[in-house]
Length: 280
Image (cartoon, rainbow, N blue to C red; front, side, top):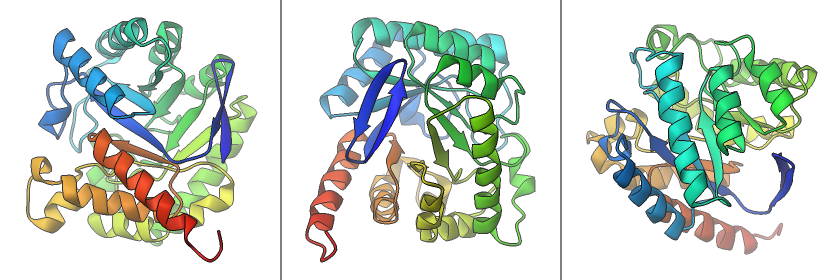
């Protein structure tokens, strides 16, 4: 159990959270997550709400390996318009802005977002940490080397678990100094990581719980799954469920997913399983 202060509202989190992915892009790696038009976007949000989503994470640009930056202005338009639309229709729904731009984070929170999810952990915009601290919302701090356009060339580690943990320890202190109280850690599966790195991080996920911070895992339909299985992202739902199960057993508090119903089933079954453990 942990608490989060989301725009002055204290949330008591007593079970793993399911975060649904809404991409306002034409080039995200999984075609089923692209929602550029108003009506399909609203239909997908309604579906996720019906299936029991806890958070929605709204992003405006693809962060797949090799993806080019669309720029601050276009991301602002995509993300803030969607948050304004969704918040107007579902005012109680918890929304997260997926951005590394401080200006987009600021506008997104003004439009109704209650969290900032930054794949760069504050490295790509020096104003991000101070901005989030001033906004008073939770912050997802992810580990990534380079940028989406360059990260594949930077997947080099002597000990990936130790290096990611050291990075988090430093960034948690940076966040504290910037006035951010609620930090959620994301190891950055697939971001400057090979499949071997990703499996190592998943195996060692519980190591990161020593920080005392909630862990977010984003493995949904990613290449570690579909390349290992020799399938496509469209066929990777079952593999995603397997990986999400492992993540919850190893300490994950958030699952960032394309498929809400299946993720909620994982949460329900893993919680039931844990209740029967001798230590419970």
